[in-house]
Length: 115
Length: 112
Image (cartoon, rainbow over all chains, first blue to last red; front, top):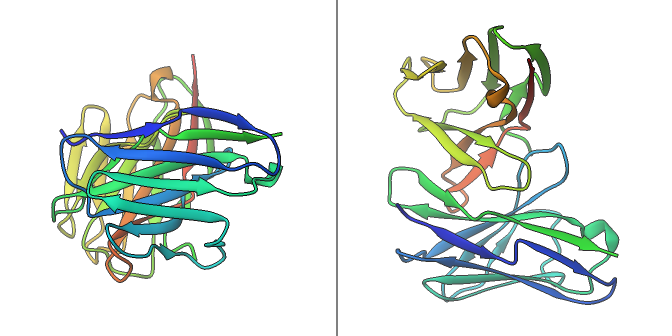
């Protein structure tokens, strides 16, 4: 089946630094990837839709200058959390749509802790 | 905006009991999906329901899609501790690049 590989699985960074999260589609081409954020005991909230070769579409309330998304190839999308602060600590998950019949595959998530 | 309302948000039951989780919306969806998520992992697809009135069974789990394709339910029979987890319903937002929109989730705890 279609697999999305997400790295790193865990990262701890100091406040003010930037962190990059990568999602790679291993055996298919993902023209679109979705980035979600999940706080403890809560559901997944869509942050942005990443399109290969074009600018990402951000959800209302998500700062595009803080959460930089790059989708330069059909198999790689990255999310960079810039100038991270403790309130950015969360679980970040990427997802790709597979096929036309509403099939989706998810990365295993990245636990970001900003200290 | 939370298009999908999921209830209950938390559920703690004993092994052997039955339970039902509801997912409701005022919007019509072409399909709804149910996921289960373990802590620290991505969600795993359980089922996709497509046709209004459809019922799908996955061992002790029964999924139903409402006739009007606005709501869905998940029923678990004789719950086991291994069923513990976060259950999420999700629908496709066709007006937003086909992103999945998730309900708030139901955190289920099944105790022996």
